[in-house]
Length: 109
Length: 125
Image (cartoon, rainbow over all chains, first blue to last red):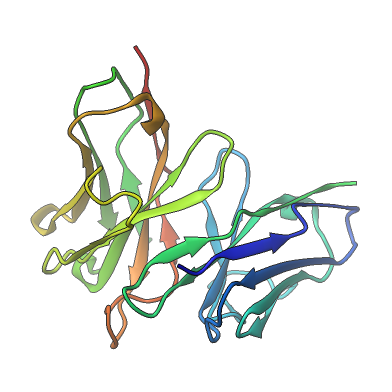
């Protein structure tokens, strides 16, 4: 089973600052990694798939990068709407098991 | 508009059965897989399983195999998640999510592009 680790657990930043979130897999997953945003009381929303492709309607300030075992979600300039929990997620090639990371909470400094 | 509409909140007692639903609209229901994801209070996301509406092909997470049943009724564009005997530890929000198909095994993609708003299940005596 592939394990995902996210760091830091909490990121405290001011609006306008750059956020850098890390996700590490216990074994290579090529570029098959996704990122989701979840705000309190809401369902998760897909931000990034295939490590670096933005989902429909996602602003350009969200950028995904990485491959293999190390991935990064960068929010170039935090807006008030971006304070949320961010999860990374992968799917194993076979038998096709999905795994989520524990999440990184981005809160207001 | 593409939507997954989930059934309403449920309050049940331990030992009772339950079936919750997730209806798809705004797209061809049989062209996408439907997954279920659990979120326990204050915790992260856990994938439970996935079903193909076209042929009911289902894969379960090892953690949930035998604990729940995932099914689909393509005639009404609806997927279901059910329990035979609920436990207090089943208290959680349950999300359904859409997964695009893939040309390679296991024939579903690597991410979930549309999510339902969630169904809150509370199990308490």
